[in-house]
Length: 288
View: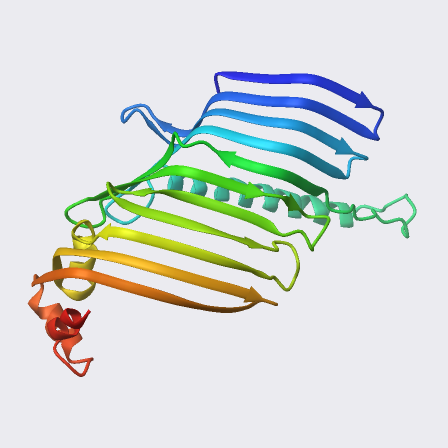
């Protein structure tokens, strides 16, 4: 982290604490100095108008993220480099801490308690969070590199638009709207938008997602691994609409695959899969 800025702090006892702005610049998580990349990095984070009322309600007007990038690299075993090792280390540390806490609790139980035995710690209510709006600027992207297949699969998702809000955990009827758009690879466009009630036990909302002009040849290594065929050419398009009513999902998905051209690569796998369907696999694929 290169810079942290706090602006105009106002504290009124324990009833209200106000921070007009909170900023972080040049922040990164799990950096890789050799590759000059990070699992997650952020050029600028700006949080506007933060209020903490009665140590119970956290109110935020707007969260703006600029230059949010993520470089995800998977090894030959399909594990995310640096992330899996870090999570394993944290898990081991938590197990040690939990073991220590358990031993301490056993020791306390064996020690006479001179305090009132009927006195118990009262559980605290959960902190309620309200965020009016979250935005991520267009200079953000996710880069994926997968060495678990050959040849290595590489792609990027370049973000063009991200809008989310409002979010209010104290009001279950609040409907959170979202709008996300970006480019997958060179030409494919991904747009998803809708609204959903996040916090009720029975959720309601609707989601619409469109993926257009997705080139299939870059996905050929996955296809060869799954069905034994290389994807020489082809384009994938999808329009999906989903509605959620009291946790019940209903939807439809229109899929169009154009100019698909395939070539056998793993004859043994093809033969194995063909025995499980009522027609030759290449014929079934050609119908698409």
